Amino acid sequence: MQTFNHFIDGRFQPASNGRTFEKRSPTDNQLMGQVAEGTQADIDAAVGAAREALHGDWGRIAVDRRIAMMHAVADGITRRFDDFVAAEEADTGQPHHVIAHAFVPRGAANFKIFADIVKNVPAESFVMDTPDGAGALNYALRKPKGVIAVISPWNAPLLLMTWKVGPALACGNTVVVKPSEETPATATLLGEVMNEVGVPKGVYNVVHGFGPDAAGEFLTRHEDVDAITFTGETATGTAIMKAAADGIRDVSFELGGKNAGIVFADCDFDATVEGIFRSAFMNTGQVCLGTERVYVERAIFDRFVAALKARCEGVTYGRPSDLGVNFGPLISQVHRRKVLSYYGKAMAEGATLITGGGVPDMPAELAGGSWIQPTIWTGLPETASVVREEIFGPCCHVRAFDGEEEVVRLANANRYGLSTTIWTENLKRAHRMAAAIDAGIAWVNSWFLRDLRTPFGGSKQSGIGREGGVHSLEFYTEMRNVCIKL
Ligand code: NAD
Ligand code: 6OD
Image (cartoon, rainbow, N blue to C red; front, side, top):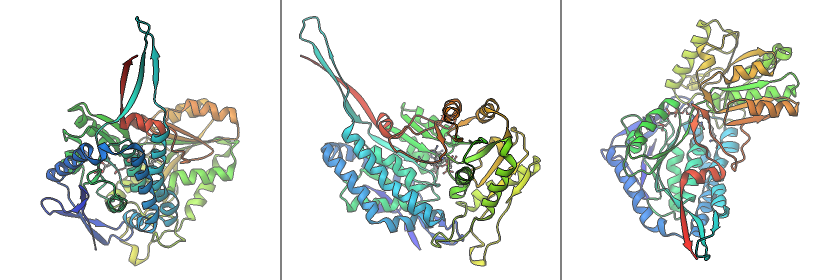
């Protein structure tokens, strides 16, 4: 049995009132441990420690030393790779290959890349004329924004948290992280790494707990928080934006998606089936960038649906540590009830069920887990709830289309605009489609292929702002103009 305490001012500590909540395994619903339940006093202490560190060692540290420390954090994650993999597998129940090859390496990369960017980004400068002929020199200083609140979700906990903590710290800020209540493990473990590599106390703080009227909201409403970076549901983003309005705090939001996968008849068929399968079903469909709407050009529709069905019916369920397993459970029983309610709605709205639609038979020791079948529907109108709303589960609706104009109209008729994945061997068409789809990210013949220097974020109700590369610096620093009369 584990205890997940807060990490405040460099020390692990329980909640101020001693309260905890349970963390259960998604794999078998067994009790894994108790998590400190953050209070207002805990948030006050964490924000206070973060502010103190800004005024203290962290505020005074030389940039080179700060950058070296960020590399040390990345190396610390790599050194304790197996611990991070085990913690993330236990928290999420996702297969070893996803955690070990994709998510945990990104934890380390998120520290390295932003350290390098901060070190190398040039400063803006302008020389100007003055009436006396002497001139003046303007240059821009990048100052850290201050104390940053990081609110993160459960679907790729380490990747998504460090995607914000990495640039925030590299830019000289301090952070208070409120990880998802579902996945406390890797944020806690990162506290150990921070101490191991000598990051000053108060720079990285973690307060566990819930969102509304709890640690999350206490943090976003805290008057000494300078900016809020959030990944999660669009509805939560709305609540946080209201909280941020008091005190005019800046926000960066990575929110929900209902992303369209677009398959043209001229695609590389086998690679496309594999690509769409990954984009719809990786991480049991719990990826914001995932494809829940698939549009397939009519000429290959039947063949494509049959191939995707076969791929779904070949998945292997089981514990993350079993290397033959490639399909994990959903994060919780609560989330499974939500996804299953959509499975029910699809049928009630007249879907044709191609495969799945329920819960797989599992051996007795795993029967308590949040297992669910990958599911494909066809035959629904675009007005159906499973075609319009984000489900965040392993399911997609597949529809035939005729021509680019129709598919652009269908893909764009949604309130979200996070990503799209387009499959075609026609280069001109690829460029046209990438420009035409309303999305922050357009992948062509690929999906979730990430270069961390690129802008990342959503259009429409999928987010506010862009992070990644120098775009992260835009959010995590404030530019100050210095004008020197020569
Ligand atoms: P969520 O919005 O329920 O929770 C995210 C975090 O916000 C959690 O830590 C939660 O405790 C906290 N929270 C909830 N209400 C709050 C409030 N009122 N004030 C402050 N904090 C609050 O999201 P989730 O269920 O953890 O994650 C799934 C969602 O995240 C999906 O919608 C998915 O699309 C989205 N997501 C988006 C991206 C992206 O990059 N765009 C990435 C991953 C996940
Ligand atoms: O790759 C990233 O940087 C990122 N933010 C991925 C988001 C995945 C959503 O589930």
